[in-house]
Image (cartoon, rainbow, N blue to C red; front, side, top):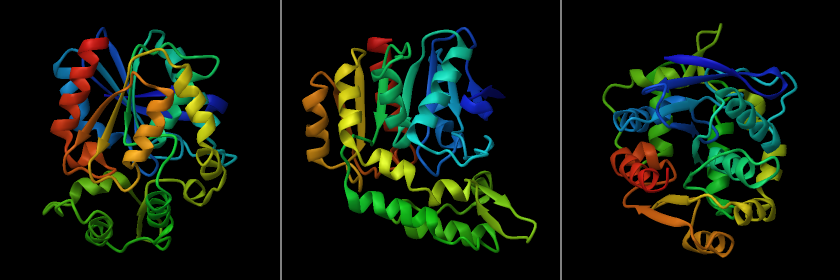
Length: 278
């Protein structure tokens, strides 16, 4: 079921709700350039264990509104998360990939702190590898002219993610595309998000995120892809300086897109963590 929340500044945010409404809520926050659909397998696994999974489309992504003033700052995303949790009206665990993880850190670690009993960071740390970050940005800014077919878009994804087998049926990719009046397919995100520099500048200041991590008292888990192009061993150790009790799982054979590469392993590790602490 898809529901809508009101984010900060009136932005409408789409969310897929899976599982019993009276279950313990888990809010799933995707990374930049992804959508709520990236959490499909994780949401089902959580629901099977009695959790209420809420997979959110971030502003400027998927079926959520684009920001009228192109505000894609980290503070806008944190404001959206705080607004969603206020409307939910009860504590929720946070599972955030990349941008979603950084959003979770600030929402839980800065005032006013949201009430979140557990946090899962998915392949994200305050300090990250610049080459990996640059590669993501280049992909998102590439092909502004779009694609003639879904197959062509699938070819672009395969070139970007060579470690992941190209699916024979690419129809599922349609959820990540929008068909323009010119008959061409383009990625679902607001071009202003991909072109914006404010968010890049925000996330290039690790000290703010490290201070937030140090202020968090809730249990925290970092799940990294073992072949991540974004989070290296030294980045994990740097975060441990500020969050010494943080738990850590390395998912063998997974890249930055951990849940997409090895969802079975990722979901199992996340659920084990939640069942211990939430």
